[in-house]
Image (cartoon, rainbow, N blue to C red; front, side):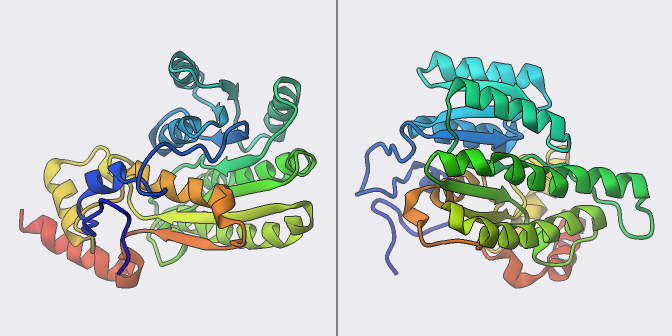
Length: 292
């Protein structure tokens, strides 16, 4: 099996993946120099790592989030390190917010090349207990927010010479998951990805999606005790959760010209978790956690 230079092939070592360059055996990459990249949900977690990753490869980053304080702090941090960045307040479920964000981007930069639909909320309520309000709230952000985003940016990306949309989904949209609203929103995102990809192909816009499994330090494990986190890691095929940098690597690949012939595609970033299936994963987790 061919592996990147300097990588020993052990995916249980995230530090190896994070430190490995996939370009000519090493050196800085600048795949997005001069490109304007809009990232939703950018103020923390995976979104903040995405912003940093794009900025480090030369992108002008537009940081969109409802959390103004955190978003502006990230903007300052990126600028202090010599990167171009702009924060915009954006509730992705609000069409008016999208219009305002696009006006600012057009005014400031006159172009847009990449949209990363990363904003999302989690719900773990099952079908027997979910309310219509919770259902609608989750789908408004996770699914309608992505639809509004693609719809809002398409003309500017076209007029900028084409580009890429990357939707951040979840393995919950690939296999069964007890959080009915969340799972439905992520399954729907896969259909949105395919439909939008076909519709926007003639405008030179590719639309793809990444689907990570549980990201370390986020979601259900964020507030969990150490025993649960360790049990959760043990049941994963790779022996650990995916880290945000690995998700970012997949997103940047799909956003870049390196994936120029990849369109309407789902990219799993799960270390093989989907191959096991959620029922089996839950059974293993319960067994591992009860033994700690």
